Structures are given as C-alpha cells and as structure tokens.
Length: 110
Length: 110
Length: 110
Image 1: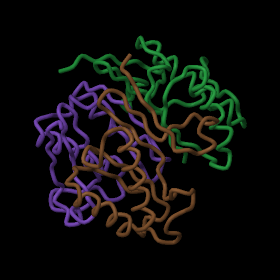
Image 2 (image 1 turned 60 degrees about the horizontal axis):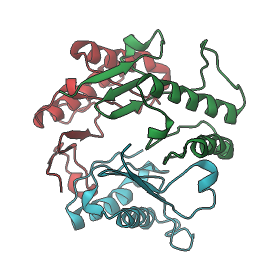
Image 3 (image 1 turned 180 degrees about the vertical axis):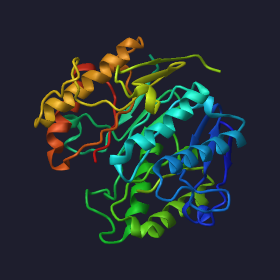
C-alpha cells in the first residue's frame, strides 16, 4: 500500500470522529475542513467574510507546509460558504491567494 | 485509456441517470452516493443517525471489497448530512470505522 | 512539479476570484463550476431542468476537448441542483450523456 502521512489540526474531537486535517498519499495531498480558526482556537475575522476566507486559506497553507508542499501545488479548492450574497469577498481572498503564488485553482461557490 | 471497472448498486434507476456505485480506474476507486439502505432495499436505522451512518459506511466497504480493496485504502470521505446538530452521532460512527481499520481519512460535515 | 495547463471560461470575474474552468495536471483533469451558460453568455433552457443539465454537460465536454480529452475520460461527476424534486430531469440528461459515450461515471444529487 502506498505510504501515507497524516497531520492533525489539534482539535480534541479529531480522534472521536476520525478526522485528519490533511493526508498525504504518495504525491497527493488532501486537506479538509479548514475554517477561520486562528492559532489559539479563536475565530479570526468575525463578521468579515474576506478575513475569514483568508484565514481558512492560511490554514490550508500551514497544513501543506507540514507535508513538504505549498500553495503552488494546489490543483483544486472547494469552498462551502454560508452567505452566497457575499461571494465577492470570498472570491477576492481566493483570488489574492492565486495571484501571489501563480497556482492554478478551480473552485466552486455555494 | 486506463482500464476501468464499475460496479452497480442494483438500483433500477442506475441506467436511467447514468450512475455507478463505484468505479475503479487503475489504482484509484471512487465510491459515491452511499446511504443507509440495507441488502433488501430497506432503510436501516430510521431516526437513528449513528445507525444510518454505520450502514452507509458498510455499503462503502462492500463496494470496495467488490473491487479488491478495503476500508484501509480510503484516503478521503465526504459526508452530506441532513441535521448538523447531530454531528456527534455521525462523527462517532465515522470514528469507529477509523479506529477499527487504522485508515487515515479526512471528512467534511454539512 | 508536474506540468499543468489551465483554460479559461472567459468570464470577467475569473482573475478576480482566482478561477479556472479546468486544469490539467499530468494525466488528470479537473473541470469545475459548469452551468447552463451558452456560447454568448446567455442561460440556455430557462425553466427546463433537462435542457440546463444538458448544456452544463456540453460545457464540460468543450472544456475537456480543449485539453485533448473527451467525455469518455470522465470518472466522476458531481451535480449540485436547486430543486431535487426534479431529479428525473437532471438524471435523464446525465444518463443520456453516459449512454452515448459508454463512460463510467458516478454522481451525487443534492
């Protein structure tokens, strides 16, 4: 079986529900369930869709870095949002990520 | 083109809507649309989120087995749920699956 | 890093939000966010779930063709719908796609 590495988000409920922040299998990485939580477990950017999106993306970057990868390796992102009327804020944060790194991402808004 | 195998869930509407329970392409398997249906088409665990989740996961296992794979090969799961307030029940079923098999899974709740 | 190609849908907001219609990385292609838009930016099949689904699938085919691939290479589709009570219309369009090409697809309705 292909070797795999997983990393934890540090959340207490991880082992209960069978969650990993990210899994690397061979040369593929899956990152999941990333929100606007900051390093100390606080929500970053309450009420600010742009700031929350940026934080969630930083959390993805941190997970990738721990698996010897970076934003430039992303091939797909998928965003689940709570208020689609604020799509420009979500999208702007996502677009800035892309321009900074020249990654080629596709994503879907809900 | 890479060789592929597909398996059926047995549902009558499969050919109408163009659905397969699972597809194997080379060394990758995609399993989809698994619910709490039992072997005879009955819903298992009506009103019991934990039991329904367990059944859905057993159906995934059965699909994998038919393609010469098992739970230990899973790298990602994705759950779509109808009542997020019951996340502990969904999560507990998912976590037990993981502990039993030492698989490294990531998942998302909605 | 594996070579990649991306293609644009032509939408003005693409560069703002960091979107690509499709990305090819090695022998894998990801197509995303395809709706019932026609070649001139108009919505095809207003009020007709079957026609809209067919158009969205044609847009996927066009994206694949631009990356030297076709419907026969699809291994997974995922549909997000606005009115699940019309699943037969969505499903029929999807099923016709499959029968025409013998592709092995799995999909999920919401």
